[in-house]
Image (cartoon, rainbow over all chains, first blue to last red; front, side):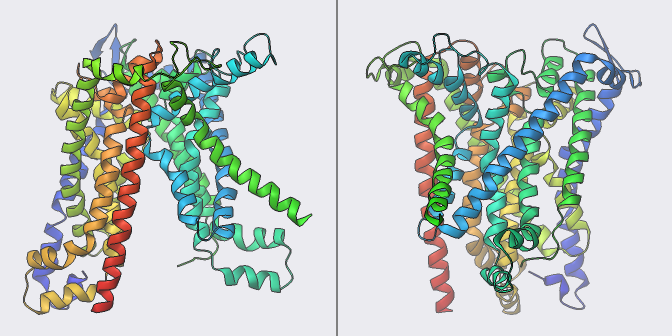
Length: 291
Length: 268
């Protein structure tokens, strides 16, 4: 398709420029404008549900000084980062196992991890409500076996439930990202490392990890993006103790009807996640490339 | 020692799969359990929760509504996304890279942020919440998915195919239709299937854009949050089974197509 590389075809080059125009229009109308409007909105005020178009940073000050918002934001970051790390720690070795140990059944193993991604996010979250609930699968099983007398209540409607569910939801993303990096690792590199007398741990630290950590980081980042702004999980299994930043945003949109404050929270969330992802991308750059 | 290590890694490996599937299986088991309360021990076998699906008018409406949206989204995002991929692939310089990065943004930002920014935009321009808003909202994150999948395929194509076609006098359009399109068809099909599930399952963005009509996930959402209705388990199990059948079908088609492409490559 390298038409424009043909020398002396100015007309073709102009044509390919023109053919990018729809992309520009799309980007401006559906990407840049909504984000710009969200920022504008975050600078306006809402008084008793009435929109006042006065520019000020009051919403940001309110969001960042309110103790409730601060504590929920901190909890959200802890839970989201924790879940993303745990999901990566589970998914990366699993991907490694699939790449190294399986040959015939490899495609099936990969497919089985991806299948849950195709089953609705909502359903996957809901399933944990059935597992962890006061009369859910775990409690009612333990009760009927006589192992406990009272249902364990710490499981549902807590940060723990949100953490567990987010980890569960994130595993397939982390797996796919880790797998596609590990799969491209040539066997010869590992053999060379072993032949040179490296222990498996040394091989991992000096060969495998530096070449595949970018994949792990992509999976981690996807998981973080997914869990940072999520409000379905906290609403379904989090209860009052498991409220997350996304739930607070939704409240501004619905119950409180303070869209400008909600917009300010969205901008804050966006900036924080962008910052984290930039750090992750920076510290996990690969040393060398695999084609 | 070695065998013990092998045993442990196999156990851990299988454990991951058990973790992934156990909650889903529990939904399926409860969907066949003859009790209003979803607890162990099981009370007996019944299919009445499945029968109840047919009686639920709201549920049926939400499925039709969701399918209508998904069809529109698949139709438009396949065309727009394919066009974007071809345009980006044939242009040179930095402009296509920057445009691609911009188009992809809505697919990466957290759903709440995308939903809120779109809701604000529609409110300002005065679009009432409803079908049109949802379709546009879904397109913002499905078009980049199609673009990336198709672009990925285009970049693996041998440029000599299109060059040969142009040398033989075919114009850009004929070259696309007779040479490029048959080669990227499976990528478009795969992207369309992905888009369909993405749209049909979406809750977060849809929540901000929906009017009074509910899509299926919004209906399930409103049902599961407060009341427990066992027929939700039944519908959820059905969707899961349909998804799995679709995936198997999609993977088969793609594999077969890749193989037939390979063999036609050989013939060339």
